[in-house]
Figure: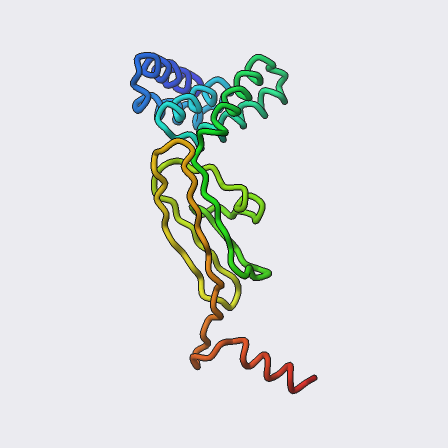
Length: 187
């Protein structure tokens, strides 16, 4: 059954993690969690991620474990997850994204996930490695870049998104020019 498979993966993951082979343990915890989500599996996966240097992923999972533990009244698990999350807060790498001249309907994404202004300013927890930042807005040219986060503890990276230029129309002119003429003619 699915439950038996999830339990077998979990137990093998715990055995590998205990022996120090976290690189092999993490995928087992991930698969067990996918088959049958459980707070213990999630906690062990967070620990596995932290040991692999994926602190942002570990932080997010420890916070999720704390949320689920609080809802289900598991005080010991709640305390342990909150303690681990607090310890990671100062060790996690962060990526701050500044938007120069933001547009009303401008979207900013980090690795495909939309991020709001407050989160961007605070700095988004990120794991080491390459991350993709992109931004777009209606009738404007989209912008994108990649940034590599070093595996250093508490690394801080910054990305500045320049003003997005208006997209050219088929005539090569900015779509804002005809609009300005029409509005001026009516006014």
